[in-house]
Length: 255
Image 1 (cartoon, rainbow, N blue to C red):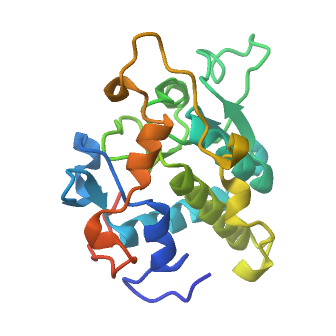
Image 2: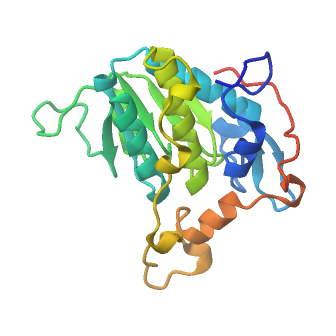
């Protein structure tokens, strides 16, 4: 890993964080996410502190490394979250669930798809609220990647991040997978991690952004957050962030 220093970035270079757009939030903040918001950009998007994101990914990796991977369930429902979440699950050996988790999957032994996880990791605490609800019923820890507007009820550990951007999601799961393997002792250093961040990124047709079919009567403003137009907004740097200038620091919040 990048050399650790108190109150410094641990897992990756600051410019790589900025380039991924991992710190760019939405124009709304939920009550549970206010403590992670550091500022507001000129375009009205809330901004998350990179050092806090870095420390939360590292702490989450330490938690994940303590569990039997076969007892970990990872969920993803957004277009750009599925590929990186599935890649992460394959690398650490966890159970990946694509799309909506059905009621009873964690609580009803009579279901064919019943499973009893010891840890749940969700890619979006809004879209995957059913998985969170199920996990809360059996009192298992929940780690959630949450954007500024996401609900945090029942979530035990939050990774504050842009969970809509294609590059951002790839970078989050890349760092998380690498750190988990290091903390588990599967690899001795980052240099031994044989996967590139590109392998976590959702692949697009013809090298362009995926284009889900618009709903009938849908306008630009009504498109879902994982539509390419929203993706472009989620990853667009603010003028003052061009060239990956030095990120502002804020104390990491305690869970």
